[in-house]
Length: 540
Image 1: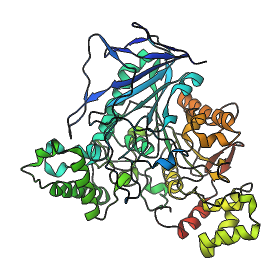
Image 2: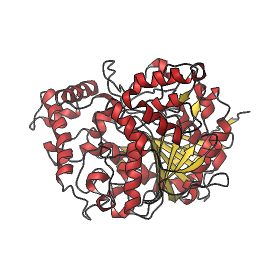
Image 3: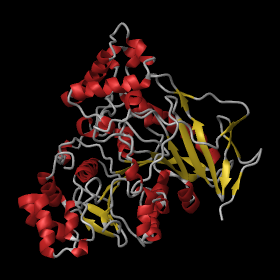
Image 4: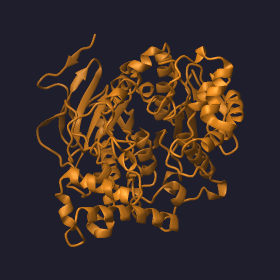
């Protein structure tokens, strides 16, 4: 039975910044809505000054404003109601003053030195929040694994990533302010987490989708050095977009001064500057009146950026923006800039799900089709390469129905492979790779989708009705959550139940995670390339 305790003087945690009053839920302390930074629009974040007295920490803080709903834009950041059964979403009061974090822990005011997980939410760099997906809740992970869980909100979309550096020094970092918020949150963790029983020297940064992209971006930010020691990237590796494998000779080290120097990076920077310039133009502003952009109503600013992106033939919606390179602060994606020497010893987990965004096929019960009918369906969808694709799929996944060949992801898998192989060629620090291969017995069976592994990481699978259609919840939760916890503790996800092997340049080990986990040698590159050659570009 659930028991919640909150009295006038309990539980209160005494941090170096000040006292916070949360609540105890069974044996886990919850502290919500902790303000970690303050900032005006397009300004760098500043730490919250220490305070006297006791602050309330019982309710979630504001989330960042989302881009206006646009039903005509693919990737709209506002979830459709009918999708909330497969992936529940929660929306919350919004404010530009959105720098809040939440903490779950079994210890307060004692030196417990427990591993710390800092979770970065998904939604690209334009959408989402720390509470958007109920499975982000850290209670069960903290309760079962005795770790400290932190998640946070930060500035997104135009507020966090619109590059206005063309308009002077005061806007030099406008294109990475969302990441600067995250760095400020990590500094807060460094300074305060011991009061919550956490070990400031054992912090793992993890995230899924856009959160994984943010974790990858932190590796390219000198300011973040020393604020974390391990990284987990779930369906969010930042690659070069063309799927070309990086050779050992190309797995380069970034310039020691962390500057933007090569033509690819300079063009990347210029692309984001053009979007900022066009947005300013759409608002009828210029260099002399640029400071007025700080008071333009948010919806007008967001609409102007969307129209600017359309005019420049750039993506809109959730994929409209991402961090823009800034000398000495964010040096750009590893593929163009190289890996930073300061990150050489950081172990990583990188992985994907089997289905990602290609999981949904309205075919009903797969067993209702004959093998001939299945091949006809595949040929209609995959064309002349069907026989070759089926042969490869059956070789890699001998126990899975061949119809799931249509569900095998290529977009995120390619980037995960690219980053893993590049990193392994550059450093001896371990890189561990996985793919969640669960088939969910819902609507005739679906390959696990984008975000589908998150409930198992946090031991929250029962929060999602669709996951409750299977008989595997506890088993898969123990497998996945146990691996993530072991990695947080030691940098190695191996447990008594399942031993992981690192991905190396010679042996591309991959953990297939489902009811019957196994370590395999990476052998699906041919399948990925075949599928990518017959799919629309977004899915490839």
